[in-house]
Image (cartoon, rainbow, N blue to C red):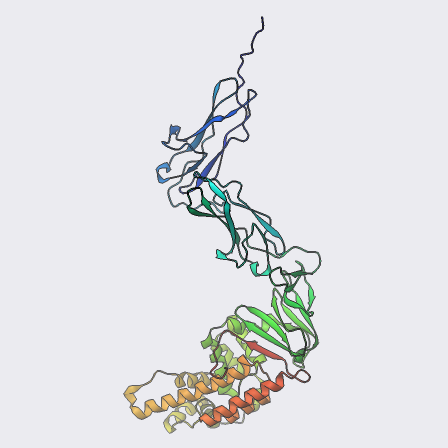
Length: 513
C-alpha cells in the first residue's frame, strides 16, 4: 500500500505594499516575495484590501486608492490562493502606518507611486527610457495605439515622441517626464504621466568636454567641478563653467569683442569677419582676452560689472541721470555697469551720488574754486537745459554755501524736482514748464541709454560729443542719435573697433528699429 503525503507546507515570505498611505495615493499589493513548497495556483489568487482589519467593500484589485474614509485607519491587504495540494492559503500584509488627514503632503523626497517609470539619469548627453511595464488598464490597452510625449517642466518637447529621449542642453536645470498615451480596448483615449526626474544636470567629467546637442548639432564646452580655463573656439554655442571660479578665454584683443548682459545670462560676440560668432556663457565668473584694453590689467570680472541686468528700468535710468546731472554726457558703459552692480548689491542711490563726487572727472568739472552759484546753475542746465528762477537759485546757493545741503544731495533734489508730479494749482505756465523739463530730461536719458546700454560704448569723448549735440530740439535729438549710430558703426570695425558692453532686456529704446 502506498501512503500519500498529506502534509501542508505553509507559505513563506511576506506580502508587501508599495506606496504611501496618504489620501489620494495609490497602493499596490506585491506578493512577489511569497513562496509555497506546494506551489501557488495563480488562477485562484485574489486580493482583499482591509481597513483596520475589516474588509473594504469592492476593494479587490491589486491596487487600492486611499480615500478620505481611510483617515485615521491602517490599511493592509489579504492575499488568498489555493496551492496545488488543494489547500486554501491566506497571507495578510503588515498594516501601513495610520493614514494622516486629507491634504497632508507627502514627506520630503517621497514621490507618488507611479507605474510609468523613466529609466536613466537626467544628465546632458544621457538617454532616458520610458518603461510602461507596470501600467495596467481594467479595459485593456490597445498596444497598436501607444505613443509617447516627453515633457520639460511639464511642457511638451517638440519632436520628442519616441520611447527613448536623449537629454539635451536645453534641458539643463529642468525636470523631465514622459506621457504614455494610448486607447483602451473600448476606444477611449487615455494617458499617464511619469513622475519627473530630478533637474537635468551637467555630466561629471575629469576634464572639460565638448558635447554635441543631438537636436541641432550645436557644440557646448562643459567644465569640471573645479576651476577651469575654458577656451572659446569656432563652432561653440555655449561655455558652461559649473562649479568653482571659471574663466572663459577669448583669443585676440578685447576691443574685438562685445559682452552682452541680460536677465537670461551672458554672451560674448566676436566683431571679426568669420569670427567665433556669439557664444553664451553660464557658470563663468571671469572673461579673459588675449590682450586687454588699457582700463583692465586682467580678466573681466563679471561679479563687478554684471549687475545692471538685475535692475529694473527705473533704477538703471536713475544712474544715467546722475551722469547727465554731474557731467552732461552719456554714461560710459563700463562705468555705468560698475555703478549698476554696486546698486544691485545693495548700495543706495544717495550713497552712489556721494561717491560720484570723489571721482577725477567730478573734480575736473567742479574744482574747489567753483562757486555755489556756478555749480548750481551748471547742474540746472545739465538737467533742464535752462537757468533756474531767481528765487530758486538763491535758496539753493544759500543752502550750499552754509553746508546745509551737500553737492550730491543738491543734484538728487534737482533730479527729483524735474520728475515731480504736475502742480496744476500753480497755473498753466508752471505746468507747461514742468512738461518741457520732463521731456528734456527724458530725451537725455534715452540718449544716454542708447549710447551706453543699448550700444554698449564707453568712449568718454564720444559720450560728451553726443550730449553736446542735443539742444532740446527735435533736430538736435536727431543729430545726437545719428552720432551714436556713427560711433557704434566705428566701434564694430573688425580691425580697429572698441570693446562693447551691452545690457539687454531692461530698457526699451525709441531709437532702435
